[in-house]
Length: 287
Image (cartoon, rainbow, N blue to C red; front, side, top):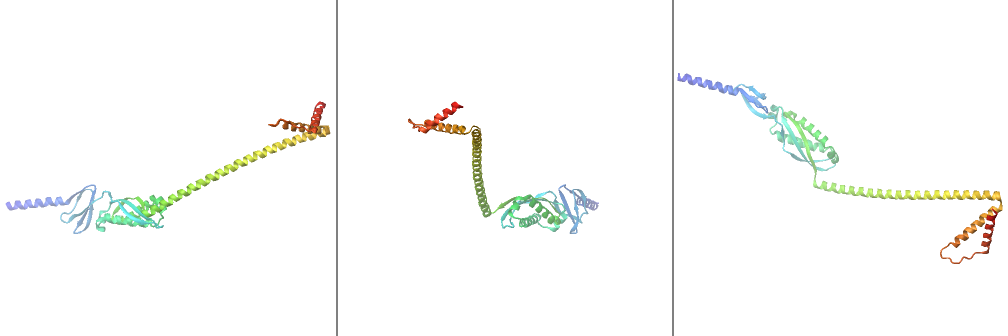
């Protein structure tokens, strides 16, 4: 009887152990890779799963959470022979663990090496200015290439970013000198344009003044021509007396101007001038 109890207890224990091994509860963030006789049998998803005891075993427990690779730094050379130091960051997650565990040993190292090679290849097709101005486009290209290459490993690259693109010290110094030279050139151009504008404005001012003087001379000439025409008409109408009257008036005006000069205490008047006064007064009375 005692021997039968022992066998019963052993059988019960075996059944409990078999049930324990048959039932597999997989967490939400995990997937289990099950092998049977050393070969891939199935992949268990989250929840309650059943396996064949003593035949199936969980060979790998793989997390499907998103992972971030350590920030990587690598050198790259552009088509115009500029050495760049590129800083990259990659996020990925495992979608097909049966591919990941049987096709690649070190996933992180493999992805990092792949990203470094793609970065060097893509930057090697561009010039420095294109790299600096089209970083978003470069990032998109790298992301697509990485996704295509790691697909066979059962991995999904969720993000691949270029965090920084730095120049080596020699190139940075040369570019700084170039920038300073460009600034100096722009300053000289602006100064020259300012001087040019000043000269142009000065010339325009002088041209305007000359035009105004010419207009004034034309007005004066028109007035003199009009006066001459009036005098000519008077001479034609009144004869020689009108001409003598005009000459007498001019003589009187000239003598008056001489007498009004500063610092003159004595004025000598020629006899002909007295005759001019007499003629002018005589004509005035006659008129």
